[in-house]
Length: 261
Image (cartoon, one colour):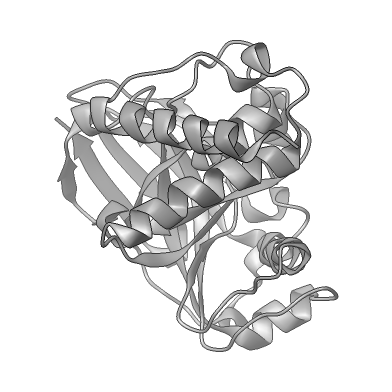
């Protein structure tokens, strides 16, 4: 692994980039031997410093769980990051565009847990039993590392490119519908840009949550009751510009809207 001082230096560099809405050079260009474990260590230092500064963790995001996203990024391994309370937006929000860099939107489902989930052998059925409800959610991607040539190591270190989340629609208990068949239509400025079905996430969106519980077990952690888990996008990311309006129609699960200004 990278030396501890290097991991801390990179975490501090990413924290500065977040505050400045800027982008830094790829970690893998500067440290070609950096590993996935290095990347999670960088993310962990960054996370702990934010917690020490008073931010509150409300959940986790899972990324790169669908073929659509893997093909869009050229990265084939899922990843995860953390979500703080000040990154959650409600349906209909006007979102400050300048709070992010390289702004893109993804279509997802969010799972709210009523029970803890512990690996290493968590399954889809364990996730469904532990879930209080599932709700539509949009993820705002926010990159602080240059995009060209980026690898899974760069993405993980950058908190899995998470910037924010918009919650909306109609929450439902997981036994009220077949989650594989949840579909969505994503519009930007009244033009349809992407469509998708939730089965695109590892054949079942709960499979992403099970993957995360098992992955966290490798790092000595687990998912706690009350956490909100973004299960992964089932569409490709859509680029957003200042002034854009976003509407996502989930059919029986309702709609989400927001605008970037």
